[in-house]
Length: 272
Ligand SMILES: C[S@@+](CC[C@H](N)C(=O)[O-])C[C@H]1O[C@@H](n2cnc3c(N)ncnc32)[C@H](O)[C@@H]1O
Image (cartoon, rainbow, N blue to C red; front, side, top):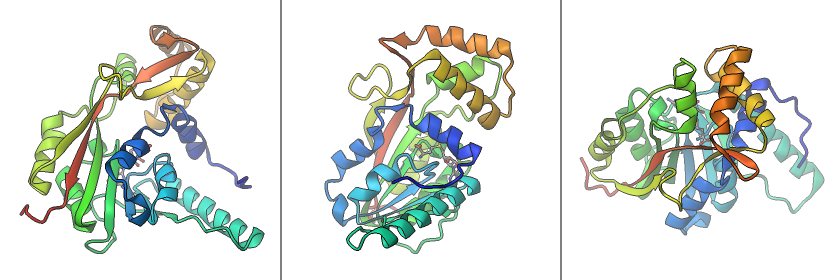
């Protein structure tokens, strides 16, 4: 559906990066493999960004809510949603309004009642949260008994972070998986399962960003450095990035790997 909305630069640039995730349905296909009862399930995405993941899962679920701390991103998605609902209501009597909604809130202070969702997902978000224990307790609180939490935990060593570091910039939190993920998960849920290791060594779960050309890559990097690292790239920075990316050129595309671990936890009621 074509929506006549002016897209702010933040959303435009973020979506430029979202479109580069390869394979694009990576997270949603893993959730689908683990939970075959999506049509009867209510889903919450914590830290949904521009909705890249939840928009794939929402049409398969009973209902879905995405929350994020980023107010500008959420405001834009709420506007898009209300326009989409308006168009469906005006144009046909058989279309179903989208069952996904977006809310601006913090993972550490969820404005939902206890036992609200069957599934909660946190793709590539937990590393950005200081009080991870609190965020996980909140996720558990809003899950129904027997509900599942899926955490895609980012690990250091991915190509994006490595290039940012080589440029002398802050790559963001470089977390240790045991203290950042496993300890708080065990303390909150009692136990957790390492469901997938995500990285270049694991052929099945090869996942990352792909650019169709060096020009596209430099456009994306230029935006990312300005918006995510408050750094105006010089010509020398961009030449340096080109050199780094030349080592990552494959057949007709340039790839940057993401490393991570997928943890799955169940709210069993046995934990404290
Ligand atoms: C790397 S992005 C991932 C976005 C999305 N899940 C995806 O996979 O495309 C991390 C997101 O977590 C959000 N975030 C960080 N801290 C948060 C918090 N305390 N509560 C809610 N969202 C948070 C950021 O605003 C950002 O949108």
